[in-house]
Amino acid sequence: MARPSTQKQRRREVIDAALDAAAEHGLRNLSLTDVANQAGVTRGALLYYYDDLEAILVEAHAAGMARVGEERAALVTQRVSAAEKLATAIEAGLPRGPEDALMRLLYEFDVLAGKSPLHDELVQKLYSEQLTLYRHILTEGVASGEFSLTGPLDDTAMNFVALEDAYGLHIVAGGSITVPDALRAIRVYATQAGAPLPPQSA
Image (cartoon, rainbow, N blue to C red; front, side, top):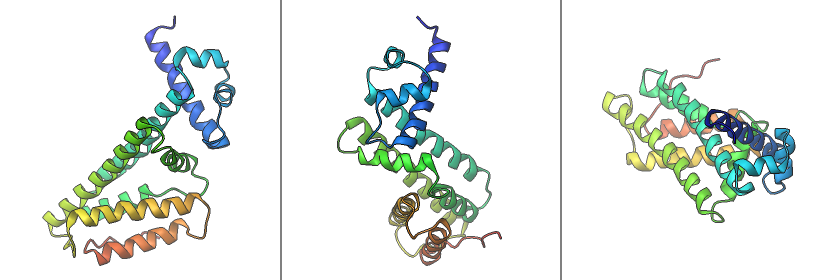
């Protein structure tokens, strides 16, 4: 039996392999064999650490969310003013482009909501984290006098999340909406909502 530290490392490697394999094959077509091949191990080796593919996917979903959430939170905390924090949160919340495999995968995981209680819980957790981030930034901006919201704070925060998710989905789908398009439109909404942002850097 693997020692605890070794087992933890092996599980991380399996999750990394699952995220890579899912990005390559798509969730709908992903098999345990795909994950095993990506990890360079046998199916039996995977089943030593996980009960089945669903157990791997649940942990991969959580790991992907954590990476995206932690990366954005770290960027936001580096900013001083509420306006700068809001601008950073908006930019970091969008995919980098259609090639952003992790963000595309997180949108695919949303499709599993309604089919698995565990995935439902993770989708709701991500939404709650998005909403909380925007609420905190808006609250700080109102308190500092930077923002003078034209509507209820909670509704404004919900709208930022909705725009982020909607535009993000179009971006990873490779449609006509690009990252600059999405940023421009959300910045317009921020101004209309009474939360003006600093000018974009060139």
